[in-house]
Amino acid sequence: MPPVIDQEECIGCGECYEACQSDVFHYTNEGESPTVSYPEECWHCNACVSVCPVEAVSLRIPLPMMVLYHEREISDTLKTP
Ligand code: SF4
Ligand code: SF4
Image 1 (tube, protein in one colour):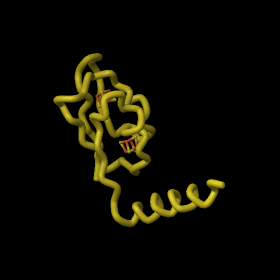
Image 2 (cartoon, rainbow, N blue to C red):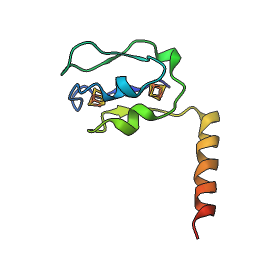
Image 3 (cartoon, helix red, strand yellow):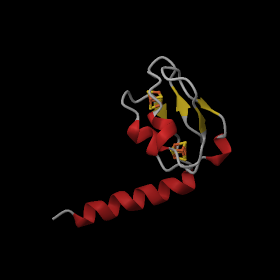
């Protein structure tokens, strides 16, 4: 699912727009919330969620991709001494 911006929390910093490599967001005015203009371009990299300073972006990872996220968590756990 494409990202959703919580308009109540967003401070319009544009960090999510800067972080997205797929131009999913449209952002023109500083202080205003970006819009999700090209949701179909989202490949669920999670960058926009990670950079948002106020946790205003949420993303639902599609089920097939959740398996990859889960496997990465497991491999990270195995690396821990
Ligand atoms: S998850 Fe990645 S591709 Fe999707 S909108 Fe966020 S930064 Fe862009
Ligand atoms: S990074 Fe967060 S606060 Fe900044 S514009 Fe995006 S959603 Fe709003």
